[in-house]
Length: 198
Length: 195
Image 1: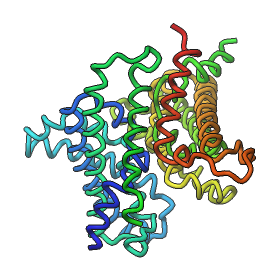
Image 2: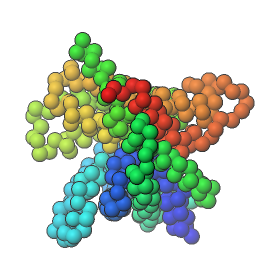
Image 3: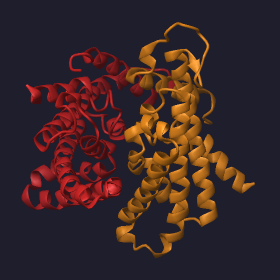
Image 4: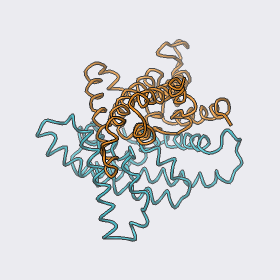
Protein backbone atom coordinates (compact mmCIF):
# COMPACT_ATOMS: atom_id res chain seq x y z
CA UNK A 1 0.00 0.00 0.00
CA UNK A 2 2.76 2.33 1.01
CA UNK A 3 4.65 1.65 -2.23
CA UNK A 4 1.43 2.11 -4.18
CA UNK A 5 1.00 5.55 -2.59
CA UNK A 6 4.57 6.48 -3.45
CA UNK A 7 4.05 5.46 -7.06
CA UNK A 8 0.74 7.32 -7.55
CA UNK A 9 2.09 10.38 -5.79
CA UNK A 10 5.30 10.49 -7.82
CA UNK A 11 3.73 9.86 -11.22
CA UNK A 12 0.51 11.88 -11.09
CA UNK A 13 0.14 14.11 -8.06
CA UNK A 14 3.65 15.50 -7.81
CA UNK A 15 4.62 14.98 -11.43
CA UNK A 16 8.26 15.97 -11.73
CA UNK A 17 7.81 18.25 -14.73
CA UNK A 18 4.30 19.57 -14.33
CA UNK A 19 4.26 20.12 -10.57
CA UNK A 20 7.89 20.22 -9.44
CA UNK A 21 9.42 22.01 -12.45
CA UNK A 22 12.46 19.75 -12.71
CA UNK A 23 14.07 18.81 -16.01
CA UNK A 24 12.30 21.49 -18.05
CA UNK A 25 15.20 22.16 -20.43
CA UNK A 26 15.35 18.68 -21.99
CA UNK A 27 11.57 18.51 -21.69
CA UNK A 28 11.27 21.47 -24.04
CA UNK A 29 14.37 20.59 -26.02
CA UNK A 30 13.73 17.06 -27.23
CA UNK A 31 9.96 16.82 -27.22
CA UNK A 32 9.61 17.75 -30.88
CA UNK A 33 9.19 14.15 -31.94
CA UNK A 34 7.61 11.22 -30.17
CA UNK A 35 10.54 8.91 -30.92
CA UNK A 36 13.23 11.18 -29.44
CA UNK A 37 10.98 11.94 -26.49
CA UNK A 38 10.61 8.27 -25.60
CA UNK A 39 14.37 7.69 -26.09
CA UNK A 40 15.18 10.52 -23.71
CA UNK A 41 12.63 9.28 -21.18
CA UNK A 42 14.22 5.83 -21.16
CA UNK A 43 17.68 7.27 -20.64
CA UNK A 44 16.47 9.54 -17.83
CA UNK A 45 14.62 6.69 -16.16
CA UNK A 46 17.75 4.55 -16.15
CA UNK A 47 20.07 7.28 -14.87
CA UNK A 48 17.72 8.68 -12.20
CA UNK A 49 17.18 5.27 -10.62
CA UNK A 50 20.86 4.38 -10.71
CA UNK A 51 21.98 7.82 -9.48
CA UNK A 52 19.52 7.74 -6.60
CA UNK A 53 20.82 4.32 -5.50
CA UNK A 54 24.45 5.48 -5.55
CA UNK A 55 23.91 8.92 -3.99
CA UNK A 56 21.68 7.44 -1.28
CA UNK A 57 24.40 4.98 -0.29
CA UNK A 58 27.12 7.64 -0.43
CA UNK A 59 25.07 9.96 1.74
CA UNK A 60 24.19 7.24 4.24
CA UNK A 61 27.57 5.53 4.58
CA UNK A 62 30.05 8.28 3.77
CA UNK A 63 28.76 11.82 4.23
CA UNK A 64 26.68 11.30 7.39
CA UNK A 65 29.25 9.22 9.36
CA UNK A 66 31.98 11.74 8.51
CA UNK A 67 29.73 14.68 9.36
CA UNK A 68 30.25 16.41 6.03
CA UNK A 69 26.70 16.58 4.70
CA UNK A 70 27.30 20.19 3.64
CA UNK A 71 29.35 18.71 0.78
CA UNK A 72 26.23 17.01 -0.57
CA UNK A 73 25.86 19.25 -3.62
CA UNK A 74 29.47 18.83 -4.75
CA UNK A 75 29.58 15.10 -4.00
CA UNK A 76 26.29 14.38 -5.75
CA UNK A 77 27.02 16.29 -8.94
CA UNK A 78 30.42 14.61 -9.24
CA UNK A 79 28.88 11.19 -8.68
CA UNK A 80 26.21 11.87 -11.28
CA UNK A 81 28.70 13.14 -13.86
CA UNK A 82 30.96 10.11 -13.29
CA UNK A 83 27.99 7.76 -13.36
CA UNK A 84 26.71 9.08 -16.67
CA UNK A 85 30.17 8.63 -18.20
CA UNK A 86 30.41 5.11 -16.82
CA UNK A 87 26.94 4.13 -18.00
CA UNK A 88 27.90 5.38 -21.43
CA UNK A 89 31.09 3.28 -21.53
CA UNK A 90 29.44 0.14 -20.11
CA UNK A 91 26.42 0.36 -22.40
CA UNK A 92 28.64 0.78 -25.42
CA UNK A 93 30.36 -2.53 -24.61
CA UNK A 94 27.48 -4.56 -23.20
CA UNK A 95 24.48 -3.49 -25.23
CA UNK A 96 25.35 -1.58 -28.37
CA UNK A 97 21.75 -1.56 -29.52
CA UNK A 98 20.51 0.18 -26.36
CA UNK A 99 23.47 2.54 -26.59
CA UNK A 100 22.47 3.38 -30.14
CA UNK A 101 18.91 3.99 -29.02
CA UNK A 102 19.86 6.29 -26.16
CA UNK A 103 22.73 7.78 -28.14
CA UNK A 104 23.12 11.51 -27.79
CA UNK A 105 20.75 11.74 -24.85
CA UNK A 106 23.11 10.16 -22.35
CA UNK A 107 25.72 12.94 -22.07
CA UNK A 108 22.93 15.53 -21.89
CA UNK A 109 21.61 13.98 -18.72
CA UNK A 110 24.42 15.25 -16.47
CA UNK A 111 22.96 18.73 -16.65
CA UNK A 112 19.37 17.56 -16.33
CA UNK A 113 18.35 19.02 -13.00
CA UNK A 114 15.81 16.24 -12.54
CA UNK A 115 18.61 13.80 -11.69
CA UNK A 116 20.28 15.99 -9.06
CA UNK A 117 16.87 17.19 -7.87
CA UNK A 118 15.57 13.69 -7.17
CA UNK A 119 18.86 12.67 -5.53
CA UNK A 120 18.76 15.66 -3.18
CA UNK A 121 15.02 15.34 -2.55
CA UNK A 122 15.33 11.72 -1.52
CA UNK A 123 17.94 12.37 1.17
CA UNK A 124 16.64 15.68 2.54
CA UNK A 125 12.88 15.88 2.15
CA UNK A 126 10.40 14.56 4.70
CA UNK A 127 7.73 12.48 3.00
CA UNK A 128 4.36 12.42 4.72
CA UNK A 129 3.43 8.99 3.35
CA UNK A 130 6.65 7.46 4.65
CA UNK A 131 6.52 9.29 7.97
CA UNK A 132 9.87 11.03 7.48
CA UNK A 133 12.87 10.30 5.31
CA UNK A 134 12.71 7.42 2.85
CA UNK A 135 14.50 4.10 3.36
CA UNK A 136 16.48 2.59 0.51
CA UNK A 137 13.62 0.52 -0.93
CA UNK A 138 11.21 3.43 -0.83
CA UNK A 139 13.84 5.74 -2.30
CA UNK A 140 14.35 3.44 -5.28
CA UNK A 141 10.63 3.04 -5.89
CA UNK A 142 10.19 6.81 -5.59
CA UNK A 143 13.03 7.49 -8.03
CA UNK A 144 11.75 4.97 -10.56
CA UNK A 145 8.16 6.20 -10.32
CA UNK A 146 9.28 9.83 -10.62
CA UNK A 147 11.14 9.05 -13.80
CA UNK A 148 8.10 7.21 -15.13
CA UNK A 149 6.17 10.41 -14.47
CA UNK A 150 8.82 12.29 -16.43
CA UNK A 151 8.38 9.87 -19.32
CA UNK A 152 4.60 10.18 -19.18
CA UNK A 153 4.67 13.98 -19.30
CA UNK A 154 7.29 13.91 -22.04
CA UNK A 155 5.38 11.47 -24.28
CA UNK A 156 2.04 13.27 -23.84
CA UNK A 157 3.68 16.60 -24.60
CA UNK A 158 5.51 15.25 -27.65
CA UNK A 159 2.19 14.01 -28.96
CA UNK A 160 0.66 17.46 -28.48
CA UNK A 161 3.64 19.14 -30.09
CA UNK A 162 3.50 16.97 -33.20
CA UNK A 163 0.00 18.30 -33.73
CA UNK A 164 0.98 21.86 -32.84
CA UNK A 165 3.58 21.83 -35.60
CA UNK A 166 0.85 21.34 -38.19
CA UNK A 167 -1.13 24.36 -37.05
CA UNK A 168 -0.68 27.94 -38.07
CA UNK A 169 -0.10 30.08 -34.98
CA UNK A 170 0.53 33.87 -34.80
CA UNK A 171 4.17 34.80 -35.41
CA UNK A 172 4.96 35.96 -31.88
CA UNK A 173 3.64 32.65 -30.51
CA UNK A 174 5.73 30.45 -32.84
CA UNK A 175 8.06 27.87 -31.35
CA UNK A 176 8.68 27.93 -27.63
CA UNK A 177 5.94 30.33 -26.40
CA UNK A 178 3.06 28.26 -27.76
CA UNK A 179 4.77 25.11 -26.44
CA UNK A 180 5.05 26.57 -22.95
CA UNK A 181 1.43 27.70 -22.99
CA UNK A 182 0.37 24.17 -23.96
CA UNK A 183 2.42 22.77 -21.08
CA UNK A 184 0.50 25.17 -18.84
CA UNK A 185 -2.80 23.70 -19.98
CA UNK A 186 -1.39 20.19 -19.53
CA UNK A 187 -0.31 21.14 -16.00
CA UNK A 188 -3.82 22.44 -15.36
CA UNK A 189 -5.14 18.99 -16.30
CA UNK A 190 -2.63 17.29 -14.00
CA UNK A 191 -3.74 19.54 -11.14
CA UNK A 192 -6.92 17.45 -11.18
CA UNK A 193 -4.92 14.66 -9.52
CA UNK A 194 -3.97 16.76 -6.52
CA UNK A 195 -5.74 15.68 -3.37
CA UNK A 196 -5.57 12.00 -4.38
CA UNK A 197 -2.56 11.50 -2.13
CA UNK A 198 -1.85 13.87 0.73
CA UNK B 1 31.04 52.20 -23.72
CA UNK B 2 31.84 48.60 -24.61
CA UNK B 3 31.89 47.71 -20.93
CA UNK B 4 28.47 49.22 -20.54
CA UNK B 5 27.34 47.23 -23.57
CA UNK B 6 28.50 43.97 -21.96
CA UNK B 7 26.00 44.60 -19.19
CA UNK B 8 23.08 45.80 -21.30
CA UNK B 9 23.51 42.87 -23.71
CA UNK B 10 22.65 40.50 -20.90
CA UNK B 11 19.45 42.41 -20.18
CA UNK B 12 17.76 42.37 -23.59
CA UNK B 13 19.78 40.93 -26.48
CA UNK B 14 21.06 37.90 -24.56
CA UNK B 15 18.30 37.78 -22.01
CA UNK B 16 18.75 34.31 -20.51
CA UNK B 17 15.07 33.63 -19.93
CA UNK B 18 13.29 35.09 -22.94
CA UNK B 19 15.93 34.79 -25.66
CA UNK B 20 18.40 32.05 -24.71
CA UNK B 21 15.73 29.98 -22.90
CA UNK B 22 18.20 28.88 -20.25
CA UNK B 23 17.54 28.08 -16.62
CA UNK B 24 13.87 27.35 -17.08
CA UNK B 25 13.45 25.21 -13.97
CA UNK B 26 14.21 27.88 -11.32
CA UNK B 27 12.41 30.45 -13.49
CA UNK B 28 9.17 28.52 -13.29
CA UNK B 29 9.50 27.09 -9.82
CA UNK B 30 10.58 30.03 -7.69
CA UNK B 31 8.52 32.87 -9.15
CA UNK B 32 5.47 32.42 -6.93
CA UNK B 33 5.93 36.04 -5.81
CA UNK B 34 8.04 39.02 -6.86
CA UNK B 35 10.23 38.77 -3.77
CA UNK B 36 10.94 35.06 -4.33
CA UNK B 37 11.81 35.70 -7.97
CA UNK B 38 14.11 38.55 -7.00
CA UNK B 39 15.91 36.46 -4.37
CA UNK B 40 16.41 33.55 -6.75
CA UNK B 41 17.76 35.95 -9.39
CA UNK B 42 20.22 37.51 -6.95
CA UNK B 43 21.36 34.09 -5.72
CA UNK B 44 22.09 33.05 -9.31
CA UNK B 45 23.80 36.40 -9.97
CA UNK B 46 26.13 35.76 -7.03
CA UNK B 47 27.18 32.33 -8.28
CA UNK B 48 27.39 33.50 -11.89
CA UNK B 49 29.74 36.43 -11.18
CA UNK B 50 32.04 34.45 -8.89
CA UNK B 51 32.21 31.41 -11.17
CA UNK B 52 32.81 33.61 -14.22
CA UNK B 53 35.71 35.32 -12.42
CA UNK B 54 37.22 32.06 -11.16
CA UNK B 55 36.83 30.22 -14.46
CA UNK B 56 38.27 33.04 -16.57
CA UNK B 57 41.25 33.07 -14.21
CA UNK B 58 41.95 29.33 -14.32
CA UNK B 59 40.86 28.64 -17.92
CA UNK B 60 44.35 28.98 -19.46
CA UNK B 61 45.82 26.24 -17.24
CA UNK B 62 42.94 23.75 -17.33
CA UNK B 63 43.54 20.88 -19.78
CA UNK B 64 40.91 20.82 -22.48
CA UNK B 65 39.85 17.23 -21.84
CA UNK B 66 38.74 17.73 -18.25
CA UNK B 67 37.46 21.29 -18.46
CA UNK B 68 33.77 20.46 -17.96
CA UNK B 69 34.25 18.50 -14.71
CA UNK B 70 36.63 21.20 -13.45
CA UNK B 71 34.08 23.94 -14.19
CA UNK B 72 31.32 21.97 -12.51
CA UNK B 73 33.41 21.57 -9.36
CA UNK B 74 34.18 25.32 -9.35
CA UNK B 75 30.49 26.14 -9.73
CA UNK B 76 29.45 23.58 -7.10
CA UNK B 77 31.94 25.12 -4.68
CA UNK B 78 30.41 28.58 -5.04
CA UNK B 79 26.91 27.12 -4.74
CA UNK B 80 27.88 25.41 -1.48
CA UNK B 81 29.32 28.71 -0.28
CA UNK B 82 26.04 30.43 -1.15
CA UNK B 83 24.05 27.71 0.63
CA UNK B 84 26.05 28.17 3.83
CA UNK B 85 25.81 31.98 3.64
CA UNK B 86 22.06 31.90 3.05
CA UNK B 87 21.49 29.40 5.84
CA UNK B 88 23.34 31.74 8.17
CA UNK B 89 21.95 35.16 7.16
CA UNK B 90 18.65 34.64 5.30
CA UNK B 91 17.25 31.35 6.61
CA UNK B 92 13.65 32.27 5.68
CA UNK B 93 14.49 32.80 2.00
CA UNK B 94 16.66 29.68 1.99
CA UNK B 95 13.69 27.74 3.29
CA UNK B 96 11.33 29.08 0.57
CA UNK B 97 13.67 28.55 -2.36
CA UNK B 98 14.58 25.13 -0.97
CA UNK B 99 15.81 22.62 -3.52
CA UNK B 100 16.46 25.25 -6.16
CA UNK B 101 19.48 26.72 -4.37
CA UNK B 102 21.60 23.53 -4.71
CA UNK B 103 20.18 23.14 -8.21
CA UNK B 104 21.99 26.32 -9.33
CA UNK B 105 24.85 23.86 -10.00
CA UNK B 106 22.99 22.42 -12.97
CA UNK B 107 21.53 25.76 -14.08
CA UNK B 108 22.59 25.89 -17.71
CA UNK B 109 23.10 29.68 -17.53
CA UNK B 110 26.12 29.33 -15.25
CA UNK B 111 27.86 26.56 -17.18
CA UNK B 112 26.71 28.16 -20.42
CA UNK B 113 28.41 31.50 -19.67
CA UNK B 114 31.54 29.65 -18.50
CA UNK B 115 31.71 27.79 -21.80
CA UNK B 116 30.59 30.57 -24.10
CA UNK B 117 32.27 33.57 -22.53
CA UNK B 118 34.44 33.20 -19.42
CA UNK B 119 36.98 30.75 -20.82
CA UNK B 120 37.77 33.04 -23.75
CA UNK B 121 37.87 36.43 -22.02
CA UNK B 122 39.73 38.22 -19.24
CA UNK B 123 38.73 38.37 -15.59
CA UNK B 124 37.26 41.91 -15.74
CA UNK B 125 35.16 41.32 -18.84
CA UNK B 126 33.91 38.00 -17.51
CA UNK B 127 32.84 39.63 -14.26
CA UNK B 128 30.87 42.27 -16.22
CA UNK B 129 29.31 39.58 -18.40
CA UNK B 130 28.29 37.71 -15.24
CA UNK B 131 26.71 40.87 -13.84
CA UNK B 132 24.87 41.58 -17.11
CA UNK B 133 23.46 38.09 -17.63
CA UNK B 134 22.75 37.77 -13.90
CA UNK B 135 20.82 41.05 -13.93
CA UNK B 136 18.91 39.94 -17.03
CA UNK B 137 17.95 36.75 -15.24
CA UNK B 138 17.01 38.66 -12.07
CA UNK B 139 14.83 41.11 -14.03
CA UNK B 140 12.97 38.35 -15.88
CA UNK B 141 12.38 36.44 -12.66
CA UNK B 142 11.16 39.52 -10.83
CA UNK B 143 8.79 40.49 -13.66
CA UNK B 144 7.42 36.95 -13.91
CA UNK B 145 7.09 36.78 -10.12
CA UNK B 146 5.32 40.13 -10.05
CA UNK B 147 2.81 39.14 -12.74
CA UNK B 148 2.05 35.86 -11.00
CA UNK B 149 1.76 37.55 -7.61
CA UNK B 150 -0.64 40.21 -8.92
CA UNK B 151 -2.84 37.63 -10.67
CA UNK B 152 -2.52 34.87 -8.14
CA UNK B 153 -2.67 36.57 -4.77
CA UNK B 154 -3.64 40.15 -5.57
CA UNK B 155 -0.54 41.72 -4.15
CA UNK B 156 2.74 43.20 -5.35
CA UNK B 157 6.01 42.73 -3.44
CA UNK B 158 3.92 41.57 -0.50
CA UNK B 159 1.66 44.66 -0.54
CA UNK B 160 -1.93 43.50 -0.83
CA UNK B 161 -4.21 45.74 -2.89
CA UNK B 162 -7.43 43.78 -3.21
CA UNK B 163 -8.32 43.63 0.45
CA UNK B 164 -9.77 40.47 1.85
CA UNK B 165 -10.29 38.66 -1.46
CA UNK B 166 -8.34 35.70 -2.72
CA UNK B 167 -6.54 35.93 -6.04
CA UNK B 168 -6.68 33.35 -8.79
CA UNK B 169 -4.84 30.59 -7.01
CA UNK B 170 -3.93 28.72 -10.19
CA UNK B 171 -1.45 31.44 -11.08
CA UNK B 172 0.59 30.80 -7.95
CA UNK B 173 0.58 27.09 -8.72
CA UNK B 174 2.23 25.15 -11.52
CA UNK B 175 -0.08 25.89 -14.51
CA UNK B 176 0.11 29.65 -13.91
CA UNK B 177 3.90 29.54 -14.10
CA UNK B 178 3.82 28.04 -17.59
CA UNK B 179 0.98 30.23 -18.83
CA UNK B 180 2.49 33.50 -17.55
CA UNK B 181 5.94 32.66 -18.91
CA UNK B 182 4.45 31.71 -22.27
CA UNK B 183 2.51 34.95 -22.62
CA UNK B 184 5.41 37.08 -21.35
CA UNK B 185 7.59 35.48 -24.03
CA UNK B 186 5.01 36.42 -26.64
CA UNK B 187 5.06 40.04 -25.45
CA UNK B 188 8.87 40.03 -25.41
CA UNK B 189 8.98 38.66 -28.98
CA UNK B 190 6.44 41.21 -30.13
CA UNK B 191 7.90 44.38 -28.63
CA UNK B 192 11.52 43.98 -27.55
CA UNK B 193 13.18 41.53 -29.89
CA UNK B 194 14.75 43.15 -32.92
CA UNK B 195 14.26 41.59 -36.37
